[in-house]
Structures are given as structure tokens and as C-alpha cells.
Length: 352
Ligand SMILES: Nc1nc2c(ncn2[C@@H]2O[C@H](COP(=O)(O)OP(=O)(O)OP(=O)(O)O)[C@@H](O)[C@H]2O)c(=O)[nH]1
Ligand SMILES: [Mg+2]
Image (cartoon, helix red, strand yellow):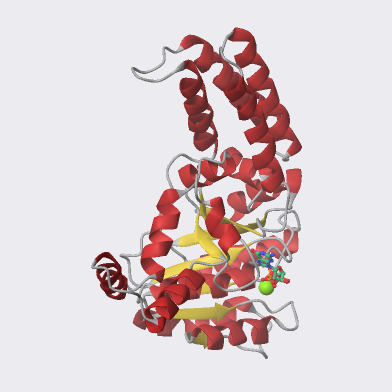
């Protein structure tokens, strides 16, 4: 599960107030302290962690529970709301109506830009969009081949020029092809946002491309360095959204999450593994309910719906309800559908 350690310490904090009979002032103060500690341990910016815990405390002590809510439910709900607010409340949208929608991926070395370009291509292709991948990274020796391979795997068109060293020239040579696509995803070289020469380069690329979205790719394990980097990328390129990668492999994601709050940009997607499918839209409410162990039924149901061919499922259901036994083929097709939903452990995490 994503951010297991942060999730388990938040759940432990909430468990305490589940166990006690009365949620009084002391319990609320102790809960808000525990949440602050859990957030700081998860690398959330200290000031933000303090603000969140203070808001939780003040609201839990001063707001009247809505009709029908127990003091405990009221408090848990406030924790949920404040953590969701911290993550940007609503999910970050991408306006796919515009054609072509041009996206530029920027970020530190090794943050996952190239992999994420492939994941985005697959994500949009699945929605029936005509997608192109473009490589402008002329620094990393294998960057061209890496993205070309991903484009082949996803079966989308690929543009780049292995012999050209100037990314702006690469763009100039291919930009007239963009009009025939719904979505154009442009990968860029890794860079430290504090390196002047490399920033001048991305500013040039950004100017030439004039993208609709500049997506900052941040690795979940970046820690507190995320903020300065995010701010510097934002100042130079005007970041419109963030993609946090490697949330599967890190105990701490708080640094990257805080960076978004600080730069006021929304997380739009998250990477949760190396494979092209290990990629999800970032939905603050679902994310927090998973962290807090409230389950994530919406995602589960959507996954189940996508995985199971509705008609065949209905057929089987009718058979079973009509007292007829399932054939081996029926059983096989249901097992297949279950398989498509991912590992059972992942599915179990979504059940409250
Ligand atoms: N576990 C995990 N690994 C990831 C994820 N995203 C990327 N990676 C891995 O991170 C490593 C770097 O990924 P790249 O996509 O090459 O990163 P990059 O930002 O393009 O790197 P440069 O172009 O060198 O700056 C690779 O080994 C990827 O497989 C993720 O969400 N989870
Ligand atoms: Mg790369």
C-alpha cells in the first residue's frame, strides 16, 4: 500500500479515540499531537504539519457535531477533511477537450519522467485518444531509445532526433506534426532546478513548445528538498500540475505532497510501480480514505467495473441466481476479471 508507514501511524492515532468511550478535550488534544507527529515523521513540512494538527484541534473542540454524528465520528470526519484540504481537496483535472493537448514533463534527474511519459501515453490511449510521445532529452545517452521503446510498447507514435543536441531544434522539426494528435506528451532531460544552465534550457523548450500543461514529476522519496525544487521549476516553467512517482517504494511521501501545497499546484497523477499500468489519477479524498483505512470503495468499484465485462458477469449472475451451476468457462472468465483488478492484497486494501 502507498505510504504504509504514514497510514499506519495515522490509523493508530485514530484507533486511540475509537477505543476510549468519551472523546473529550484531552483526547482531541492528544489526537492532534499524534497526527502532527505522524505527518512530520512522514516528511510533511513541519509548519504545514503544525497547521493541520492545529486546525483539527480547533475544529474538533469548537465545531458542533452535525446532527446524527457522534463526537468520535465528528472528530474523524474533521481529520479526514483537513488532510484532504492539505492534498488539494478536489482532484486536479486535465482539460482533454483541447486538441492537440500538449504536455511537457519536467523534473529532477531520475524522478521518473520518461517512465511517466509512457504511462501517460497508455492512460490516454486507453481513453481512445490519438497520442504522440516526443523525446527532447539530449543529455541522457539512452533517453531516445528508452522513450522509443515505451512508445512501441504502448503502440503510439514517437518523435525525436538522436543526432541533434539542441532540444529546441528537435521541437522545431517535429511540431508541425502535432496537429493530428489529441495528446502530445513531451519528455525532457532531468535537471536540478537550481542549475542555471539547465534551467535556461528548459525555459527555451517551454517557450518553443508553449504547452497546455507543464507537469512536474517528483519522486515520492525526495523528502524536504521537494519544496525548493518545486518552487524553482514553478518560477521558471509555470508548473500546472504535479505527478508524484514511486509512492509504492517509499515510506515517506510527505515532502512531495507538501511541495504541492506550498506551490499551490495540484497532484494530478501518481506512480505506484515500475510497470506502465502502475499509474493512477490522484484523488485526494480516495487517497486520504486509503491512508486512514476507511477503504476506497469508489476506486474499487470502478476497477471492478472496468475489469469485468458487464454482460458476461450478468449472464453468470443470472445463472447462479436461477439455480444453475457455473460452468468451468464461466468460472474462468470471472477469475480472469478478478485477475485484472490486480493483486488481491491491493484489492483488500480498498475494502473498508
Ligand atoms: N517503483 C517505482 N519505480 C519507478 C516509478 N516511476 C519510475 N520508476 C523507476 O525510476 C527509475 C527512473 O525512471 P525514469 O523514468 O528513467 O526517470 P527520468 O526522470 O526519466 O530520469 P532522467 O531522464 O535520467 O532524469 C526507473 O528505474 C523507473 O523504473 C514508480 O512509480 N514506482
Ligand atoms: Mg528520462
